[in-house]
Image 1 (cartoon, rainbow, N blue to C red):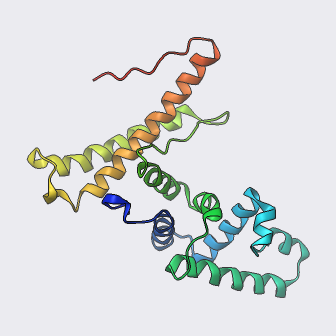
Image 2 (image 1 turned 60 degrees about the vertical axis):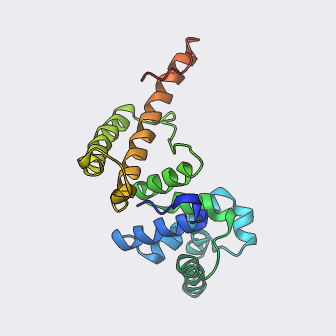
Length: 206
């Protein structure tokens, strides 16, 4: 799913909300489940801010073991998240990172890619110490197939024109996914070269 329009008519918070809403509609994650995942991420990222903003600490409430405070906090927080999802209240900027992390992996990747693309960037992840390059390569191959299929539909007549408008979002999303996985692997290779003092300038071969 790509929500951005030309000229960025769709705001960042609308992109975040759209991806969360579609994830809830298409996966087994319910709105209450997402609300609890969001609260957990907000506390993990900024516990002082989360507490100050009235985000319930469900882990602490569960440890207390009292049902009434837990149920009351759950209902109150769920209503707050539902208002954000419905667009009745603007999503606060400080919740953005936690919101993205609360998404399931596939939807998180799509959301990050779209937000990055709005600024001409690529939402690539860092493989990190525990990252698996073989897994990243497998994901790249999988996404290449999707990109070829989506782009093939658009290029069936050899051109990209306004006639392709219905298929362009899917094509863009598929290509962004390929770019993201490619950047992961490139960064991993560059990190190894840098570690042994053999870092090379990036060359783009046409």
